[in-house]
Image 1 (cartoon, rainbow, N blue to C red):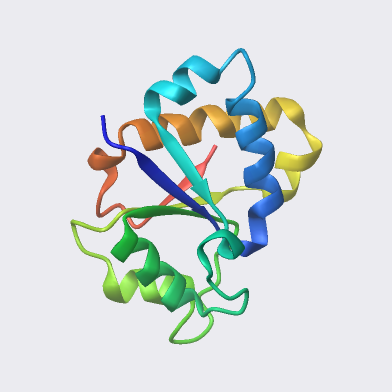
Image 2 (image 1 turned 90 degrees about the vertical axis):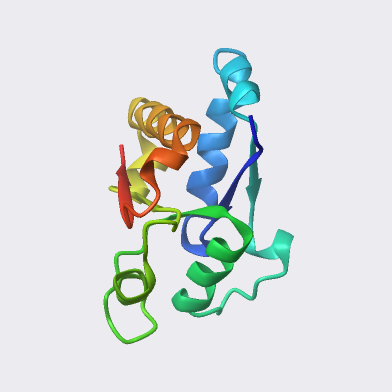
Length: 137
């Protein structure tokens, strides 16, 4: 199985960190290891925090990274939603979007549901190419 790459959008780095803590815990570690996921941050790959949504989406597609975000913005030509609508095709990786980003931090049971859903999506990511955006949980 190939290594899967995830990029935490700058707006949800704390939420993704929480999910990774869950998925690397003893109860989940074997499955996490089996799926082979590597998680990146903007800082870790040298993307500026103020990179446009369009540039982030294109970077993720070029690098074959699944973007995880809380961003639903469709304001402007370079917004994430407008970029997905304009640029997406059947080969594009979907964007995983937290349905309730704040709840991931404050509700552990919810965070467990989110972690499980992210793992499900990433495990079978090829099936979701072209899907544009998938919400978690």
